[in-house]
Length: 140
Image (cartoon, rainbow, N blue to C red):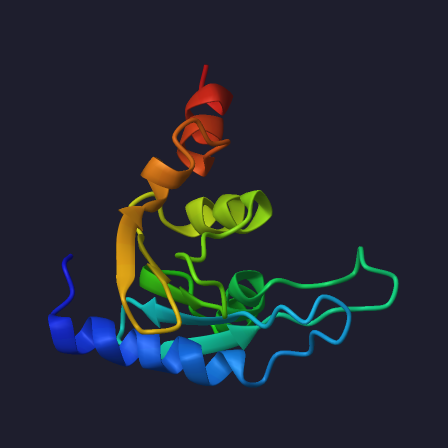
């Protein structure tokens, strides 16, 4: 399921474009995400903050929600971008969202200069509450 260098760069560029659409007036921390679906469709998302804080939506979950509402449910990879000087990693809630739909997705965490670090979601969330585990449990 490896992506080519060109596919990786395209996905990262799309996450950078999505970051520009961020609504982050409170944290001043824009984040963009580009989610690659199994059929090749790329769905983007950005973080959307709210004055009440709790209703805020991360870029990754924005992309997933958008993709799912378009009928997509199988994903290959996601690229995440921010203005951090270090690699941007998904928060715990986003990691749980990712593993809900794929226990094998590649997560490309980027820096503003375009460099990236790739990890599997199971490396980022090794002992997750996974659908496959719930299904096994319900069959006992």
